[in-house]
Length: 241
Length: 228
Image (cartoon, rainbow over all chains, first blue to last red; front, top):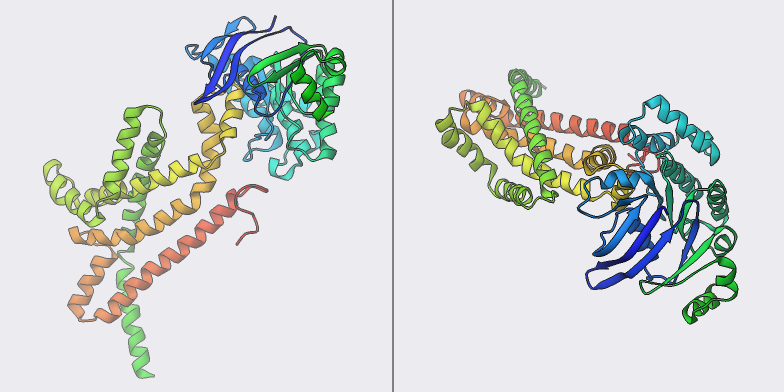
């Protein structure tokens, strides 16, 4: 298994964001994480990229353990790509430079190698006509597609999507979800926090339902949406469906 | 008309006299500003360091040199420190101004770094960059654009404050003006010209700053290209 989370807890001051969460994800799986706001969905993803520190438990990615004693944390991050709700593109760099920069600095690829990979990836998300444009000139959907390419350029084994369509205008949500669907069909291991129930039903191999920092239900999508096992999941679905 | 042309002749004579030492004013200001940039960068980064000692040291530097009048610093660097380790007027004057402006510069740079959204750090780190790589390639280039206007203002202020080093006998335009006024009993005319010379330099500088700002402006980010 690619991701092995054992009893992790994460706390911010007095707020216990994750309580004793365990989860394993196999290579190629698409796991959609659902739950009400404040349930710890984003925190779970951020822990996987070591953007949040865990207070207890164990987090293994591809056989490597992530903890603060681990000095090579930035190397493990290479295995995990992350896409954010607020895009976080680098506004002082053009589209192609955004995708190039980490390849050159971190992966030590030459400008030529990086450019070739970037163009290929941007071509896939239909952004190859905007190579020399700055992020400020792009729509939200376009920004998010560039952000996905930027993460993929590092050849990650896992992709984390943290509410990537939540900041988008409704007509742009589709173009980003299409990219994610294609990625899933290519066998990428994905953990997706989203409010797009349609996407979850169609693409997910598994649904993980979080509430108050705990995994309440871990089920296949058909069963989860038709016959949720827990009361809490039923309540949640009654509101969002 | 005779009176007017006479006045003009006096003023232009003073102007061409003072312009011969204007390079000293410029040299002092530029050198002091380079020192200020260097100290500002070191202690500005130090201020946001996670190392407690470096952070405290940087904080102390900023508080001390921001809290002492520049004139007192100039006296201290020349008559105090300068007599012990043998600093000449120019070095002492430049160091005093540089160290003082370095404290302001540190605060400007710090605010420029803190103004960048934390998501930029996170995005850089999620791509596997180390803290320093993120700082160098992602944060500082963006901070730079924020910092240009206030940092340029510091240069203008620095240029004006360079007049203070006359007190230790550096012959820049203020000192040369004082000499001229005393010798020729032309105080009104001389100080008018000295003021005019500073004004010419500061106004041209603010023009240059605007050009720089526009040159580094990015579409859809920060300063607009068509802002005046």
